Image: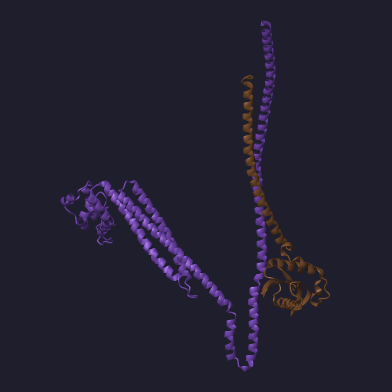
Length: 199
Length: 369
């Protein structure tokens, strides 16, 4: 079951990473575990951003989670923590998208100094919920799904057309029989008429 | 001036070659009588004799710069044509002698090819030995490449020669050889071809082994060169600690501890960088998939349209049939209606006729009684 757990944006400073914004989706964990899980995830995000070279992407497998991180050249980093089945391409697309939006919204100068409270970026949460289902959210996967659906429908259509062909064949033969029978009927009628008088 | 040498041997004059050797080697003039007796064929003896005499008179050189190699020449010609000539002579039939000669030339070519095959095989074995070496260094690439090139050229030339041999055998077949000779030549050609085929398959196998070895070597070299980054530092460390004494050891240790994580991170960096490529590659792949799906869909649509168009014809046929049936039924209906009318009108007439008959019957009965 594909699932996104955490989506966060960090700034990779020269010595450490600073949190800019994050969104968590921890409904699958029991209530008491949520705090520790959240802490663990944030620590993990921070560590991995510090370890990544700017201008590169990385996908790290950790326990039962996959962590996808993308650090841009201007040291803005996005992290997505998901389970193993979530396609990595989609997560990287998602990261790129939110980083672009974030950099548009929040001016660049503020990044090293921001506190998490100050940043207003609610889209993060909406994206998190939207991308829970990667098939619908990601444009490319969506197109692929639609195309596959269309292909199936077309296959069914062709099947139906073939059946129609068979039925038409049937009708053709029946109508031919009808035509022949009617002709015979006409001939017989004409014969009885012309042959002899009432006897 | 070199003394002119007559062609001593020819197909039609075997006896001369065999018989006159001793006479030819002597430069002294002979009695016409003796020479005449030896020339048993149509060539005039004087012809030969005069020339030699002239030669002897024209070249009275005190120093003989030219060697008299007639005997060698005669010997060579003998060996070249000896066997075939002897057998042809033995048969004494011009046609069969020709056949035997062509067969012998076929045999010569076949023997040549066999020799070439043997030498190429030896080269192939040498190449096998060279290619099987698995050491990382001491790689005799140039030798192997040279040998490969030579063997390739040999194989192609052998191929051509065998094709020529086949042509010769075909030509001989047309000149009505005996059946045994034909089958023999064809089996010889077949054997040579099969030998060539086995050699080429061996060659191919050797090349495959060589590429495998090259790949192994490359992977091992990569392993060693990747892991080679820490070992040099480790190697240099004991040297450093030996060379430099205690006061420098601390600094060197710090340096070494710092170097290794950086190299590890560099290695990790080398590993990490692939990710972007992977991501981009997967995107490109997805796009290609989508494109191919769309193309497929287009094809399916076209097929669908085609099928529907074909079925349109069937529909037309049904239409025509049903119309025909309707026409027929209308006509038949009209006929029957007419008939019915005629029948009903007939009955009317019947009634009238019967009525008249009954009237007359009654009239006659009444009036007669």
